[in-house]
Length: 182
Image 1 (cartoon, rainbow, N blue to C red):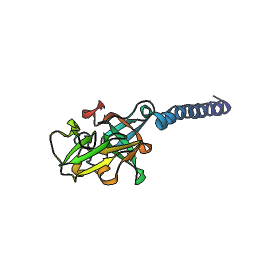
Image 2 (image 1 turned 135 degrees about the horizontal axis):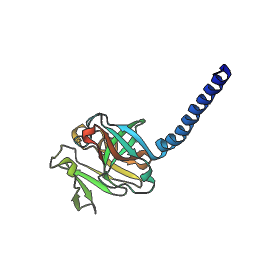
Image 3 (image 1 turned 90 degrees about the horizontal axis):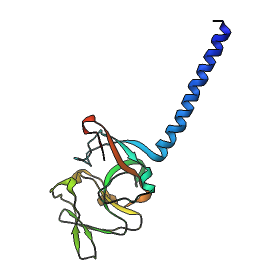
Image 4 (image 1 turned 30 degrees about the horizontal axis):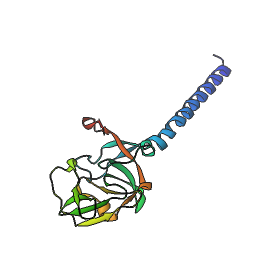
């Protein structure tokens, strides 16, 4: 092959690689920014549901179409340091009153009537927690870690504003033995 043809072929290959890269970026970047993103669990605050080092995919898009529900696990920017990401479970919804009494979490319907919140993910364990009552405003959520003694959550830094929530946990990819849709 003459040197001129080799140069022409090499230029075509470089152009093709650049084209494939640009198309890949045009597809991947919007998905990563607007639809789903990876998250690695750090710490023990969500044990036994999630363990340190587990790799999750976070669904970002459903926040735009479906309201958050009690019991869902969300990833959010920590309100006191928005560069940090946390994972916690939603316990209280906007305009609700959450009462912690004798280590249990209740929903207050009328200020007096207390309804124990069903939390099957923590079992029957009663945690030592200071008594507290929190009235949530519009777009505010009360979030707790499943491993209550080792969790920095709404008990310490208050309600979580919707604007900090990134998305819901969608799938656990790592470790393979715990792979599942969430």
